[in-house]
Length: 158
Image 1: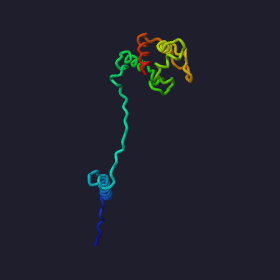
Image 2: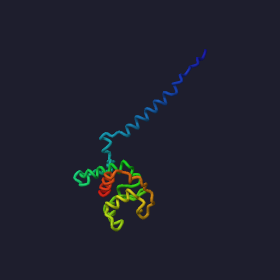
Image 3: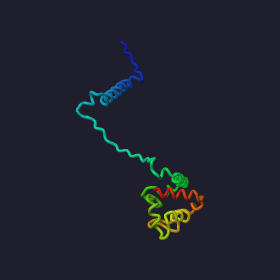
Image 4: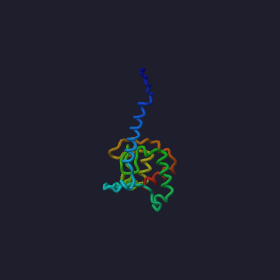
């Protein structure tokens, strides 16, 4: 009596692995199901409240109504002032500019806020705010006078 050698297909060992893998996936999906039967099983899911703050300008704000403020903001952005100054209170390379309109008039005796800001833009080394280096380039003095005035109007709105 002769014995026959049975040849196994290379896929015959893979098939059980696929069946087991498929079963594991089906069981996992069933466990993660979100139907109402499982949702009321005594472990209610409590949503976590999330606070999202979106800073949007108030259209009734006077600063937004002034075209010089908008133009000054464009000058501020176009000349990369934000690289060294925040429009908030936090300091970057230079001081934060929030409230600069109120502070500017008190920095140098005899100068108005407009005069101080004009000089700070055109000759930034003339007066250095305590705690900061003389790092602002003097190239902004070359801006057209109208752009400087609009920039000052924007700064005073902060």
